[in-house]
Image (cartoon, rainbow, N blue to C red):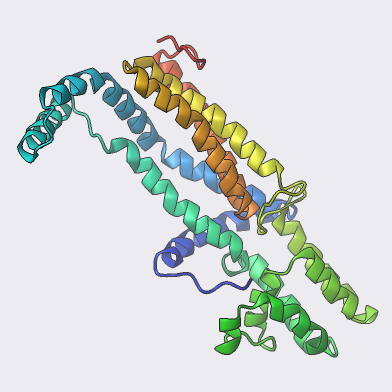
Length: 330
């Protein structure tokens, strides 16, 4: 369905990252038209993750420090079995003192996630409305819309039945969509599925098709990435199902590498079991999420996981973690 304009939270984030990805796309497009949007997403992800490396290493050190302090924190908690306000305040004060003495920030490990999540939300909207942010795509959509409106006879006769099911009733009631205006027609073309494009082409006289097909092929060359439509929801069909599978697989490897460090210093058996459970839950959640999101977002997650795998291997090596199995050796 045609989407509303981004809100006050997503709009600015998408605008910033839209400029970045359009800049990267402009460079990539000069070298290769085919797969250029997919390559731009991968390149942008690698750049962003590289810039976040100092924070990532700080996160890992903070996590190890927190794990090593667990026995001391357990002792402090046992000192205050009562749950009254005064006891809890004393307990928290001692824990904060322990953090300060050991130069540990309990929230330091959350910062990389807080930075990454805006990128995730922004990229999700960019992939849903890529023609608004990738200038070359926007030009192609506008050229297609103008050609349909100005050159193809009987345009409204076949476009109205195709367009109306794609427009929410509230937009129709408020007259937010007018198929005689190219910029608004772009929003409808953006949510067209392959079957809609084929139905539209079948309704156009043959003599008007060549220029339209030429523009459409350019659009596909940019948006498709080795058979995957980056701007469409991944779903469970082939070949889109490859994205959730790869998202789960790379996330499992990342989790095992990350948990190897946690388990190496964890002294609490319950904590070990919780971490092992998260090793399964988080990758599965990622796979489920990618099914309902544009494929481009899945490419972002997979690239992020691959980067984190290399990053974690390096950090584990530096920390002396020699195994990623169930019983890591430090």
